[in-house]
Image 1 (cartoon, chains in turn purple, orange):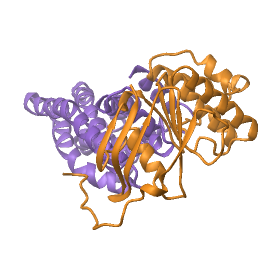
Image 2: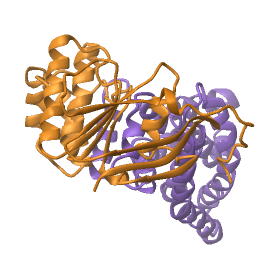
Image 3: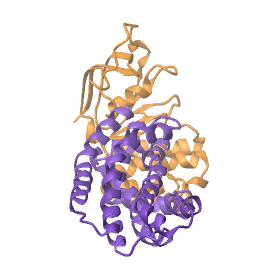
Image 4: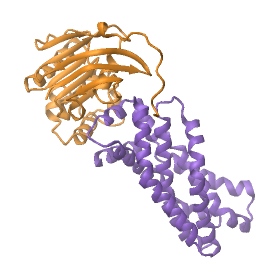
Length: 218
Length: 204
């Protein structure tokens, strides 16, 4: 398991590994928003939590098809399936590797980009908390989508269509936490909902991902 | 425990390709599958490796005892030869990779990224993976593709050493490896009769 995690992390940071793709996309989106909606600080501060969440979600979506497709193409997914690792463990490690290379950097980058969108001072903490709590769900749900579409050539479009509706609850509650935090309101309810979605997804979806992957490898 | 296949039928994409397969493979023996392209050798090997369920019949002594090598070698282009092999060694329980590197003459290539290897060198690396798995039954699908005569000899030596150590090998190949222990099993006689298309049972 640890061998698989270190291999995936190593591959991600080497040339062509796609590390930084999501980050660069997130950066571009948030830099472009002020140009698109105008430099009015009040308006930017109001939309900042939502824009940062949408940016993070799309950046996450961008790298989903790499989670399993590369291993499927070069045959190592077949070999992993015959290895003494449970399939549930393989998909969990894949999701974790995706989160470490995509979700975690987004969480760390978000406060820096919050400055660009003149996010109010009290909003930073809750922005980081909501992203830290929500991005694992994005990775786990994304791995499920990747398992469903593995083996399809150019399955990226189908993957996005499958995964986007599943991302909506995470986005709603995640952005709500960040918005309320920025407005100085109570965040408990959306925070608990977000935590519920995240932990529920982490606990249940690896079993679903492993099941569809077994069927897809036939 | 022997690998034993009893009245096995296998399907590819819901269409039965082989049926009535019966064979047993003891330790120290090799079984070479023969048959024209598309006759179902790969499907049979994938079934034995546990990647797909059999249509009917039984399969014993497989599962965690199988080391499978397919057409694709499962190599990562950006990792070196040693990292590629070391990864599989760790996954399969941390065996030393040095004997496998030596057996397939990969010692000089250790630090080369796998992406820069030739097709034959990649194949040799893919086959060296079998040795670090420590599994007793090798299931090989066209293992000699893109190997030159010298590499085929290296591979035959590795198989011979594996058999001498009590292992077994089931392979689909058209090249005569010169293995005394090998029996030939022609799958042509086991081709499935055409029958009504089965429903897709994938989600049932």
